[in-house]
Image (cartoon, rainbow, N blue to C red; front, side, top):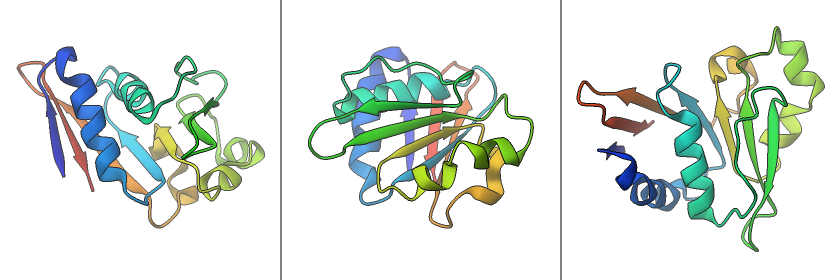
Length: 138
């Protein structure tokens, strides 16, 4: 599936489309260069899911937990950009999060590839020459 986001005006609609496509899948690994819009898109997805908490980048915390509505108890948002090794990821209990049944959105998953569940959805965000973003789910 591919979603094209022309501008920030289309972000909410793209996020709703993403949420509809999630189905029963729960772990999403977001790939993209620095500044591609991973955090911004995850924030829009969380809003589309009904998250009322403030969604921010978990760059220093590594993981943020957001309360949701009755459908999901929590949403987990990871940013592995600053981890130094897999041990750090193990130490925060990533496997418990990944297999919790709650949605998990992961930034910089390249650094923890071997910990990702087999059914992880890979989401790439590409910045086009015109500034639009192309989001591809695989």
